[in-house]
Length: 442
Picture 1 (cartoon, helix red, strand yellow):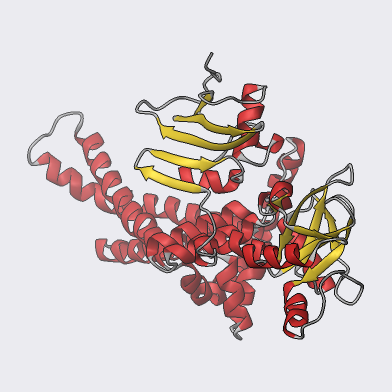
Picture 2 (cartoon, one colour):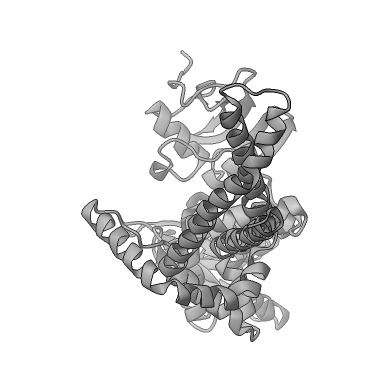
């Protein structure tokens, strides 16, 4: 064949190899979520791409058959077509024993470079730009190509499957989407400007509802305001004026003898109608939802939805009341300061760039958000910052006791009747590795 014919054949081989490389990357990189959206919108080609991804063995076998056959044929034709011309060029400057080798090397380098650039590198980079769009566009011709290569592909796949079984290699693809996958997509969306900062924060908090337990968002036992059956009218009026809550527990004598709850609206109606409040009765007391403290916030939302309630009492394994929680508390957990009442006391106060005053009852998840920590040590053993201190110190902390962890110093500032009220958290100047053994003052 003439040089022109060889060049035309090589160009056709490069185009064929480029098409296979483009298709291989596009079909492998096409995201299932986007393909499903296209399929649901009526694009039948997108569904065929999904089907091919689910059974990709025949495609990859056919693709490798085509790519390797084209590469070998291109090398043979290229070397035979270009070597005489390179040899003639070399003989003008050098006619020694190495002339044949130099001519072969130059022709091999030229053909290899052409295939690497136009049949491999450029098609693959183009496929990575819009894999779903390209995969949908090439699905029809590639299915024809797969049918042509079916007999040889079947033999190759049979041998490959036999070897996989022999070496006990699991070839099943795991397509389950984890929270880390979704979080990575959200982070990418935030960096690209698709998600605003507050939207990103809200979405993260929604997913955390599956991990956060009820105690992380409830009003703790010592802060619960409740009425007793013998509560005086003056006391009821005072509590209504002092605490702007919409619901109050009603107990027999102490907080662990829960009878139900009253809605402040019902009491205000009685006041407006000049009715006596000397005795709370069944007309005003409602049945209260009681839940264990082991529920997650997501499970509690399901309970609220099924019972049509918005208020619940939280009890522990000893049937003691540990707190109360409302639907608003869950919303505050999701939306943070956007729905937190102005009069509510801040649990985390940033003093400067490297120090915070933090309430001991602050949930660990809120602490990690504020300090930018990914995890706390053995955090399954506690739920609040006070619990973290007690777990690390192995005692009831006193003022000036401290723990150092991951470049932060957690120092107890105030303790009230064994309760850690406030801590000073300081970012250390030197980055610390892992957990430093806890230290405590004398």
